[in-house]
Length: 197
Figure (tube, rainbow, N blue to C red):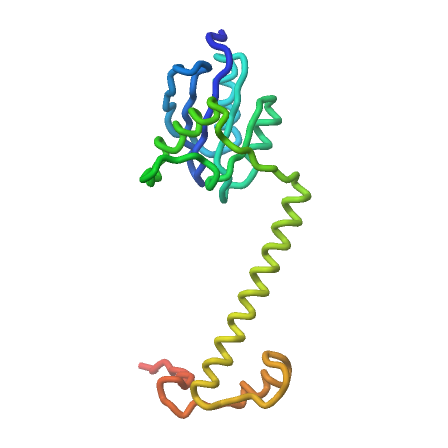
């Protein structure tokens, strides 16, 4: 039986459990912390159905983060409004640095009700997959560049300078394989043999 009109739901998402708070539809409406719920599709669907059974209209929001956009898509598929907000765009009071579930969920619900949250554009699954691929490639290229720089710096510290044009390619790798360190701590350890008893 529906007992209320609109309700605004703030969700603080995490890997295992989501903290949920609701704000009633009026300026002085109650903001309640409902607790933590498993972050699984079944648990989310059960929670949303329960709230939808009590209220005529749901407005849901959560902060963008490592949990992705699966929750957003699930809530839309259940027929309810949902927005994803950027953490950097959430209004906070000076000195408000506490990062725990309850203090994060309740302000989200309150700010959503007040219309003070800025929604992000949520990519569809194709855009998200391409974006993840591009970001992963960029991180791999940057990681490779740093590793090359470390190898070059290590060689230069010990007076070893490759005379070729490009580093970390075929000839440079052969040159690296031929290098020996004269300092005992920098040499490869000799393979240990297991003593036979």
